[in-house]
Length: 220
View 1: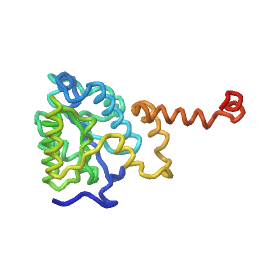
View 2 (view 1 turned 60 degrees about the vertical axis):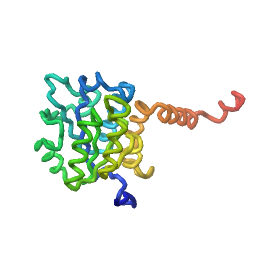
View 3 (view 1 turned 90 degrees about the horizontal axis):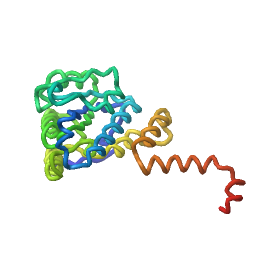
């Protein structure tokens, strides 16, 4: 087994491409590994983070006329992005999706979707076999049970996948606070979707903008 380590193994926005798979009402209805709202929040955060860091994002559904349209929390972020509707459970067997991913010229494939054990695991394992560097954003995925989700993650790790959460990915894409070109958009994602971290940032800004005289008069 080869270990994933070293600077080159960290994810870079200029080398990443995001594929979002089957975030649809049918799948959400039987999501039992997470609180459904948490997955919706996390995939919305992931999508906005990709936009903030200018990462190409491919959105795909499966039989949308029966399974429902992709969550608006995703499509509203990329209103001009055409959703690719498939019949295959394995996204990596859909030539249109694969061709679009290849056309980006990026080598770091980032994937999230529903369900983890089916429509995430299959393309991840397939793409790994084709030589791609694949990362799964586990908290923007979910399964029909906690066991199904966790076993799928174990299976993908055993196949060579990298796993992380959306905030870890965002931080890895940022990497250096001196890189300020994406800071404003990144902060907006934190404020909207990162709960404690976002609120702590707002509090920090409040304190920085509070005159010392006001703190003294308040007894601090």
